[in-house]
Amino acid sequence: MSCSSTRKHDIFLSFRGEDTRVGFTSHLHSALHRHQIDTYIDYNLTKGEQVWPKLSESIESSRVAIVVLSENYASSRWCLEELVKIMECRKLEGLVVIPVFYETDPSDVRNQTGTYDKALAKLERDLGSGLRFKVHKWKAALTEVANLCGWDSRTHRYLTNQGTEIQLQRKKQGVF
Image (tube, rainbow, N blue to C red; front, side, top):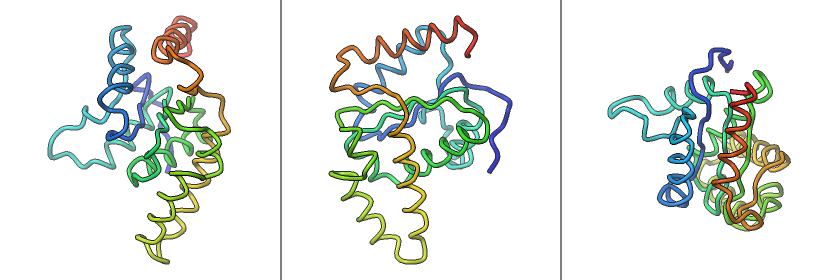
């Protein structure tokens, strides 16, 4: 699993659609788009296209990944697979990863407590013993992302505006 050095997107957005698609994530995406920051979001997928290869390629070809960690993020295998790929690209290619803790406690993500514990336990039961190694990778990625400096929506009221301003400053400074 290598990460490409060719960058196509400024930002890749990882989020649990049921939690944040209508609302926070759509507003963040719109704000980034208004400021001409090329952002990959899953509705860029073409109907009939293989989902995972396209998502994986889009993560690899992004400069920054914003991971919106919401209450039910860990209940989605897609989100967890994206997160593992994001954290691999961070290690291998220096992908910048910015966690956003949306209405969830960073320590619940870091320690897999609360809804994260319940979701991972359910996934582990559903997967059976043959695929439990995946749960271990998911837990490690959750701990790693929660140890990064990010935004906590419970303490930053104007998260979207502040996040956009930071991205604009980085774009002007040549980070993008």
